[in-house]
Image 1 (cartoon, rainbow, N blue to C red):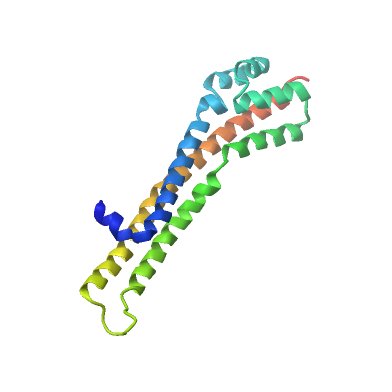
Image 2 (image 1 turned 30 degrees about the horizontal axis):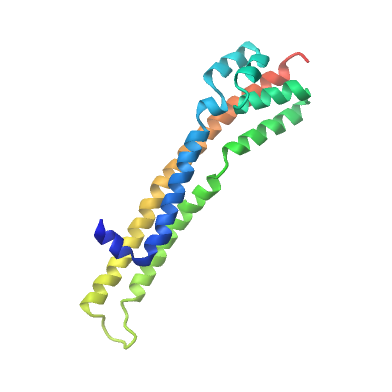
Length: 185
């Protein structure tokens, strides 16, 4: 581990920042996208039963509860209700652009470290590098590439998993909107 830290040089700072940022976004989104915060299982049963007032009362802080409260309070037309539901869905996607950026930037930082490491192999005087310079340069090149990919791959997996979870939750909220729109006004 010490070899990796020493081998990455100053590139460890931006790569470490990317790693921490990705971990924070993933943890925050996992907490924010729990069923209890978006659409509890009990609320789904109440939606199918058509008991919307109970949803607004029992789950006022969930996305489903907010949509139902808006529908009961404002009695909006279909487009306004759908727009409000899209607003709640967009809140579920908060911060994912940062995770997407980490997925793209971490390997680029690693690639930059590779280029920099190879650049250091060529001394200003010309000729061949000495053994220590060669070892440092190649070590920097390999370490930064490895770390960039090591950060990007799990971040990409988490981003895809979170995006799929949002799609599933959004489809359930779409069912809620359909049921709310079909109710007697």
